[in-house]
Structures are given as C-alpha cells and as structure tokens.
Image (cartoon, rainbow, N blue to C red; front, side, top):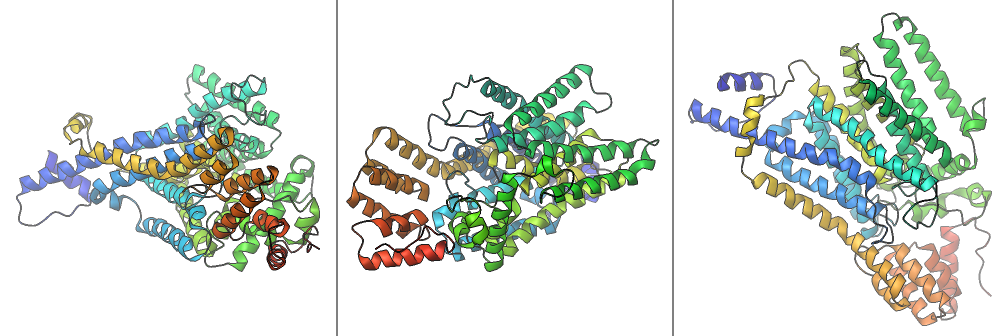
Length: 593
C-alpha cells in the first residue's frame, strides 16, 4: 500500500528523489517514507512561521526601546524567519528543490547574486548597503530575506495554507484598525511625535495602503458564496471601518488601490456568472478606460484630476525623475543599495530643486521599482520583474483552467495587483511590503497546489506519525531564526543605545554611540547637530571628519566643513566644490568670504 503510494507520488513528479543502487525495495520504501515525512514536518513548521510573520511584521513596534520604533524591530522578525526558512529548506532540499520551476530558482539566485555584486562594486558605504538607511532599512538584508520568504511561501503548495494567508491579512487588520481608531480619538497611550492614525506603520500613507489591501481581501471574502452571515457582517464592518480610517488619514493611496483591487475582483464576478459573461469585454474596456483616466489624472489632466492630483503627486514626479536618472547614469550596478538619498540632490534637476525649496529632499524614489533599479541597476530590476512574471504566469494559468469564483484566489490576486500599483507610488515599508512578497510567493504556490492530482502526499493517518521525526528539525529552525534575529539586532541595538545617549548622555556619548556598528549617517548627523548647538567646535570637527570618512557623500557634513572656523581656506574651498557638485542648482551654496 505504501509502496504504491510512493510510486504514484513519483509518477506525479511530487517527490523526485534519487536513492543509491544496491538496496532492497523495502529499504528504499523506508528511506523514501522518512524523507517524505521530513519534508512534511519541515513544511508544517515553516508554514506556521510564515503565517505568523505577516501579522507580527505589521504589528511590531518598539517605542520605548529604540529611536526608530517602527522599522528595526520589524526587520528582526523578517530576518529571523528567513534564516529559519533557509535552515528548514536545507533539511528537506531533496524533496523541496524540484517543487518550483528551475527558472524561478535561477531568477531568485541571480537577484541575490546581483545584490551581493552591487554591495561590493558600487562603492556606497557597506553598512548602509547591508542594513539600509535610517527609517527605511531597504538594504541587502531586507531584500535577501524577502526573496527567501517568497520562495518559502511558494514551496508550501497547500491550498489551505494560502487560504489562511489571506485570512491572516484580514486578522492583522483587526488590531491595526482598533489602534488607528484609538489614535483618531486622541487616546493613544504612546506619546508619538505626530498625532495621526498611522497605527503601527509610522506614516499615514503606509497605514492607508495597508488598510486598502486588507479591505480588498475582507470585501471579497464577505461577498463569497456560502459565507456565514456572522462572518460576512464582521468582514463588511471591518472593510467599511478601514475605508473610513483611510478617509481620515487624507492619503489617497488606500482608496486608489482599493478601487483597483475591487475592479479586478469585479471581473471575476462577471466571469463566473453565465448570465453576465457577455459583459466581460465591456467590463475590461471600462477598466482600461479607468486606468487611462487615472494615469492622466496623475498629470492633472482629465475628469479624475481633482480627486487624484495634488502637490504630493507633483513631488513624486520629482522623486521618480531622480530615480530614473540614477538608473540611466549607473545602468549596471546602480548607486548602491538603499543609497538613493546620497544622490538625490545631484540628479533631481533644476525644476525639482527650485519647485519649493532646495531643502525638500528624500532618500527614496517613492516607487519600489525605481528604488530597486536605482540601487542595483537594470540587472536587479529585471530579475525582480521576472519574479513578478512568474506570479503573473501562475495567476493566468489558474484563470484559464477555472471559470468559477474562487474567493481566496480572487482575494490573493486582487490584493496582489493592488500592492503592485501601490508599489509604483510608495515606499517598500516593511510592515506593508511583507504582504506583497508573501502574496507573490502565494500565487506561484497556489497554482501548483490547485493542479489536477496535486493532493497531499500524506494521509491523515500518516500525519499522526510526524511526532516520530527527530527534534533536530526544530532545533535547526530555532538556530536559523536566532541567527537572523542576531544579524538584524545589531542596528536595533545601536539605535537603542543612541536613543539612550540622547536621553541621558552627553554629546560625547552621542558621538560614541553613533560610531558603533549598525548605526547610520543619520545618527552621526544628530550628534553633529548637538555638538554645534552646544558650541563644541572641536567635537563638531571630529564628528564631521568621522562622517566624511564613513559617508563621503553626506551633504550636511560638507556644509559644516565649509562653515567651521577650524577649517582651512583650502578645506572650505574643497567643501564648496563638493557641495556644488552634489547639489548643482541650489542657490544657497556659495563660497564663503
């Protein structure tokens, strides 16, 4: 019975394993059984971590511990989970390795390879590239971890897992919504620097985007056939509340992506009803028309312009222009991972410089695709787009073979497309972006899980024997998780120590902590600012020298270098020339008398 099961599994290509010659059939069956059991227990342990990852990443904050209370703590969970996933996949590689297309492995491998090449070759500061800039943390560790998570999700290939993933997004929205409502009524127990409904995401644009994504999935599951009335009411109430919060944020991101996502879902509703299929083409035409009108509205053209266009859109065009200029000027290796801010002043152009004031700057393109291309050149963005292409291909295959309305697939696809749209106008904020990477892997895996014959390899009876697998699998996952957390803890610890020095230490203490491993240019800039305000010129000179040694393109450091009384005339002239090169259209840059 068991032998027949494994023969059938091998014929389906579900378990392609190579065993040594010269062993008995009974031993082969035993080895195959053990390997398959290892695969299943590994998958189950990993799936639990992945289902928890999204909610924890979105909800985690550390306001009492670190100066950046949003991003650094989220990165610890993402990094830890990715390293645990690597440990789990290494154990069951012989059974897992063939479960994804070889092209996907190659694309993901090349993405990581090129991240590594960029970090080595680009010339940007290594610690900045590895951990990312302050408040963003979109460096090597972040993208490496997200690639691993994408592959891990795609490897699950169990329909129930992907259904739970959609539900995890909705469940995450419940505490996030409650907290945002608390902020709206002015009862936030945390004394943030800004009073706004940003929940646990640090910015109203990010909370708007998250609520938009969650509302799409909640609305689709609420409208699903045979949905329990009580669940339907809860889901609709959640979606309506989240849309209200989006309105209160004043950020249009959430509304834009909600409309886009529900537009995609509407097509599947039309397609699934025989009486409505006649309207598929008109519906598509209407959708394309809406997309064109929205695109024109971004340029302040057309009837939707008054709803869409605003100063923030105009500023985004400036940021996109600079990101594209960085890509064109550095087409192979980019300017360095998460190093957009070092080059923005130089490449933003005269119009962007003078549109408001020269001090309106940014350290991100507000477009994830341009952030990737600016950071790592065309090879990196092409590898990323290929990964997205595999998800598109997977979704297309499901659409072709299934005419029914599958609410979980529709929720996955609609929310994912909404994320791709949001990615074109916003930042890779890890609390929001984690869902985009999870859903990318989910679409790839869901297509394989819904193929004919893609049934679980283990019966319910054999699942009870999973406890017989040695605890070494769990230990490997724990060690992997701890390793990932430790790597991400380094900047968290540096940031926490710097916050402590701000509260209780001297300027010297701030400088000492700002030099520690994992700190950023921003920490040194804060120490420099404190030294200048305290009138400690000699210390300010030391901090400036440290800044320029670590971050040669730091604009503030060159400004101070030009102004310091301790600078020689030659140093001031050098500083002026560097400032003029780094910000060529800034009228406030003048040689000092």
